[in-house]
Image 1 (cartoon, rainbow, N blue to C red):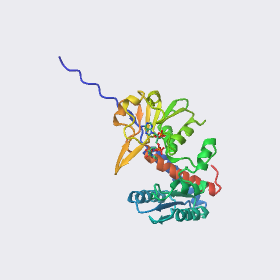
Image 2: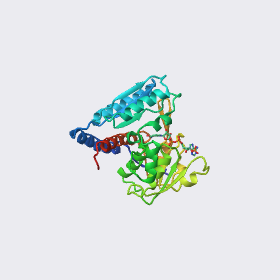
Image 3: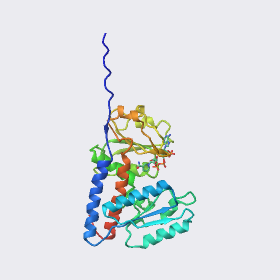
Length: 297
Ligand SMILES: NC(=O)c1ccc[n+]([C@@H]2O[C@H](COP(=O)([O-])OP(=O)(O)OC[C@H]3O[C@@H](n4cnc5c(N)ncnc54)[C@H](OP(=O)(O)O)[C@@H]3O)[C@@H](O)[C@H]2O)c1
């Protein structure tokens, strides 16, 4: 008897972040050019404390990208022994400088410094990460302002790849301040690219798979490598992997590779949400510059 060949394993459609980021950045570049034509030079300042190689590398990448988009990016480098007051003094100076429109403090600072306390001193209108409490407040009541970059990137990614969100069941694993909490607010808002039924699960919900298994869109934002396995996913669902853990240079995503056999669409393990996060940072920066210049859109 001849053996029946095994059916090829289903592989989900991939949802790469690069085309999303490219579209956002093309728009940003045009807006930068327009401001410059009008005599305003958009500026994104960067602040780095200490000598961590990875942090210095991230700053260099963002500065290179800023230059390509037409921003200037004045840079402040404080020594690893800088005090909280030293950091606040630099932030105060950049806040007061009308030529600086947006301000990025590289995370994480050395362990003796309090990043959240520093963030509190950033002018909310220059907060390029959209993480200042005033901006999270603006988000919660639907006022305009810079949006947290990773959640904004996830919403843009879903829209770009034409994954319908409105009216659908979204489950987010993780209620962290960076992703889960702001993303839940954003996707529940009454806007065409949101308007979903959103559930957030976390360690307080030990049987969280009961919720993830019914999600039409599942977002993993836990930072626990491989926490989302095929049995946690509804067949055909869209799965967005946002949580990652770094072990040295190795990036370990929340979503196991095998999930692609069950999901209908999934972000690639590398090059999914990451590029959209960076693109949203520049979108926040150009919006800050436009606001300072009195340009309404
Ligand atoms: N891709 C990107 O561009 C990007 C950008 C920023 C951050 N990230 C990554 O996104 C992840 C989340 O960041 P965050 O700051 O929003 O969150 P976070 O503060 O790291 O919190 C993680 C959340 O996941 C939940 N969680 C952890 N282990 C769990 C488990 N075993 N079962 C159920 N829930 C669990 C936690 O529950 P409790 O609240 O109950 O503790 C918490 O709500 C991190 O891995 C971070 O590296 C990615």
